[in-house]
Length: 83
Image (cartoon, rainbow, N blue to C red; front, side, top):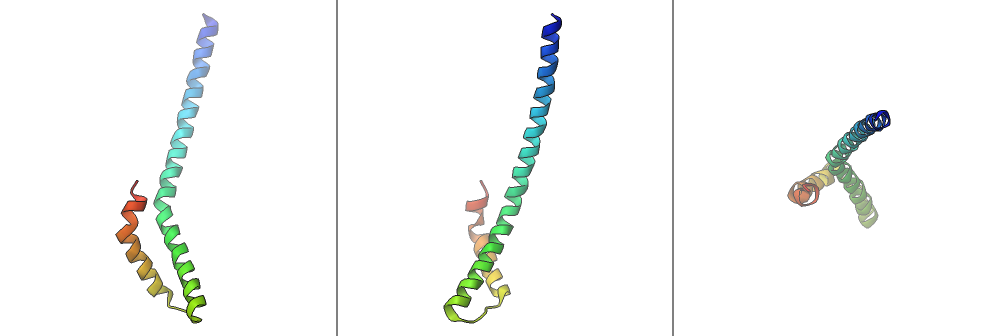
């Protein structure tokens, strides 16, 4: 009987630890999902700027590229980020 109580106590402790770890991971996933669109847009702006630079040999205003990327992101973002 004493052994069973000990096992149950340890099991409860492990269950609580697992639950805490799951909550931490879920929060981290939520944070990554919130930040992903911003990071993706930044990469898109940088890549577009570099491509245009290589294609036409001149720099382009990053705010113009940023506006285009933001506009496309708003139009298409829901289908990619709203899972």
